[in-house]
Image (cartoon, rainbow, N blue to C red; front, side, top):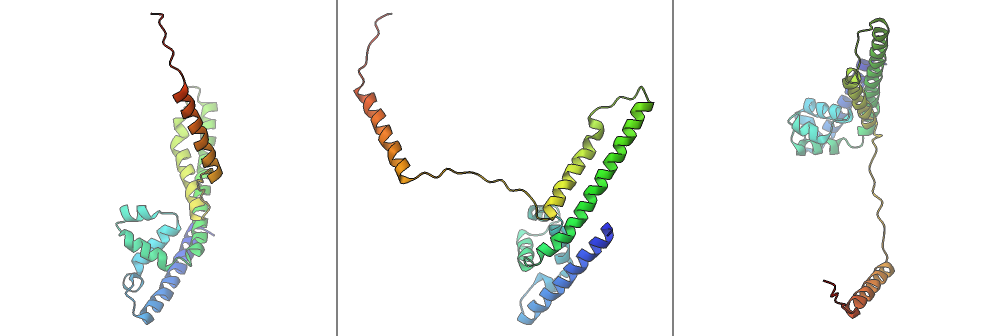
Length: 186
């Protein structure tokens, strides 16, 4: 499947889902962006399913945060289906960049072998490597495979707390009972 075919399939599924939700809201006489501006809803769903964050949708595309939240809530049940297709788009973008990187590396190797005056440094491939890393991250995000950071918190029991308090009281008592010895060696 080409990138455009996958994109068209994703937009087709989004449009069908908008029609379904819109019809449901119409029957209930509920005010809904799906009924009044389906193109805006389709744009938000497409961008969100391809890994664009809510904050970026608000800042870059000028949508209100409440609008974004409302759309995502209305379509929460089908976002996974959209992400599956958008993951294919992201994967294709990543593979395309990987292929381009391989071609550039091959050209650089060839030039290094045939042009003794060529100077190569790490910056030559830096921008492409960054783009490839971003594409990889976007592919994982679009597929819902982002990593999460977890913290490991130690749980203390009442017994641990009581023991710590008791030890602190002992140290305070020892400090109070200690004799002050003056040193007259000045």
